[in-house]
Length: 149
Figure 1: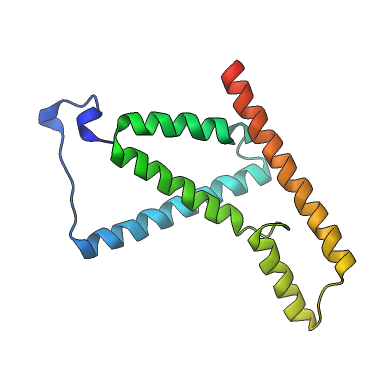
Figure 2 (figure 1 turned 90 degrees about the horizontal axis):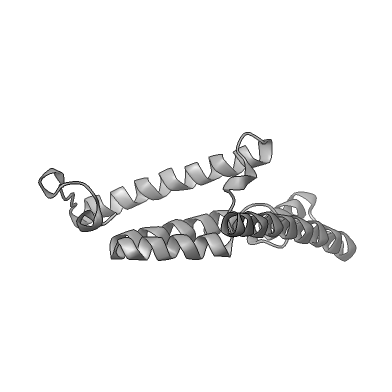
């Protein structure tokens, strides 16, 4: 959050800065922390410990992007970084149709020593498509519920 935009009195504000090497290290730590938090939340949704009401789609992303942009460049860039990390993690999940699903199929083929049949691959892709459609439906439903009450 941009300190000049916050409600903290000026005399209580401080600026934290790092040298180049320490800044890279801090970025790695923060990326790791955010990634593990994202995976924990995702696992919580899968196991039912975290509500899928927390899932948001393009409407929520646009609203949060606008809000973060109003708070300043630092806030907006941090939001974009979080979105990029989240999309990267989601793309690597072993869900067919995503890159992680392709990697999982390559691993199965490597273990088996032969390719998966085309028919099986198509069935797996259909399951992946259904999973993605369901997640998108939940995200859009949550967005519309937030907007229209």
